[in-house]
Image (tube, rainbow, N blue to C red; front, side):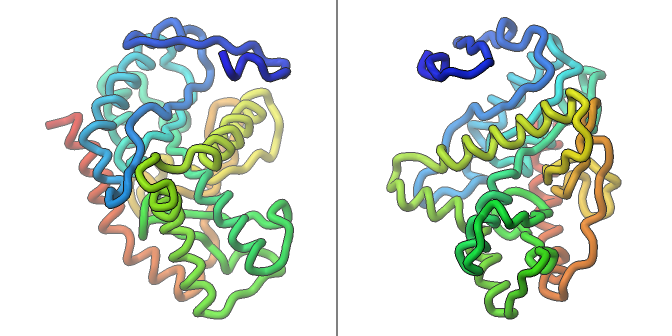
Length: 269
C-alpha cells in the first residue's frame, strides 16, 4: 500500500500469504528478497538454515507458475541460494541458466561509492566491476580496471577489505536492527530495471551478477553480463587482473565452491 502511493507509471499490487501463485502469474521478472536478515555476530552463511527453505519453496512455485521468468535472487547467502534455485528449477525441468541471477549489485554500488569518496570523484563517474561471489572474501572488486584511477597496493588491499566487509559494517551499525535495506533496495531496483530494459530490447545493457557460466572458476560466478531479450546474452570476460586481484581470486575459489556445494546438497541429498 505504501509503495502504491508513489506517483509512477507502474501499477503496484500487494500480495501476502504462503501461496505466491497470484503474485507470480504472468511474471517476466521475479526478484526474491524474502528471508531473515543478519544480526551482529552472524555472517551470511548463518542465515542458510532458515533462508534455504524459503528460497526452495518460492522457486518451486516459480517453476509451476512462471517457468520462463527471469529470476533474481537477493536472499542471502546468495552464493548458496542461487545453487538451490538452479537445482529446484532443474528438477522441475525448466532451468535456463541465462535466466537465473544472484543479485550482487550492492557490491558494485558500494564499490562505486567508496572509490569515488577516496578519489574525489562523483559516484556516477565510477563503475567498478565486481567478480566472484557475494560474501566476504568471495567479493572481488576489480579496482585495476577503473579508467583514469590508480591505487597503491595498500589502498587496493584496504579498499577491497572495506567493500568485502561493508555489509557487516551496516549490521553492526544497526546493532540488532537488521542488515542493509536502503542501499539494498536501490541495488535491487537498479538490477531489476536493467533487466527490464534489456528484455524490452534496449541494447548494450551490462550488469555484473552471479550466474552459471562455463565453470572456469566455479559453477556459479559473478562477472559482467550483457543482458538481452532472453536474460543473459553474453558472459563477458573478466579481463586482465592485477597480481593482487589474481591472488585474491585464486584464494577465494575453495570457499565459493563449498558455498555452491552446500546449496546443491540441500536439494539433492
